[in-house]
Length: 153
Image 1 (cartoon, one colour):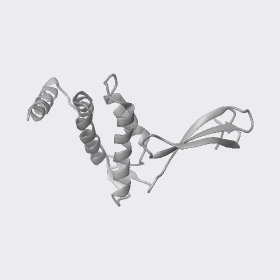
Image 2: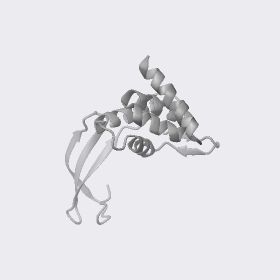
Image 3: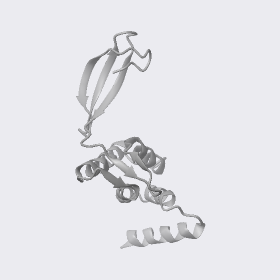
Image 4: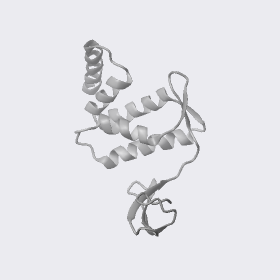
């Protein structure tokens, strides 16, 4: 592991432990060159996934994009970050264990919407407004109305 401070190639692991959700390993490292300490996280990757975008473009799956989208939708909401991490890990696990090497971006978006719907209605509506590309206020009103009806049932 390369040191993020001095770019020295040798680092020593000082401590390893699983994260709370058990999906990754947290390692505390020390650089042999400059002595700086830093933390890394290791995750199991079952397969290399390729995401097929709406325009047909293919990109490698990037977990950080999921995390960023969820963080934006949940900004200033009273949601435990550990629950968000578990949701993202669950989505990634479902994708990796599906047996497919390619997945459509729309499928990932729907999975995120389902997860957010279960966590927080406001975050769900925020994400949907971008994901479904609302172009006018009426689109927003219609969607919020359908969500409100579903919650009442």
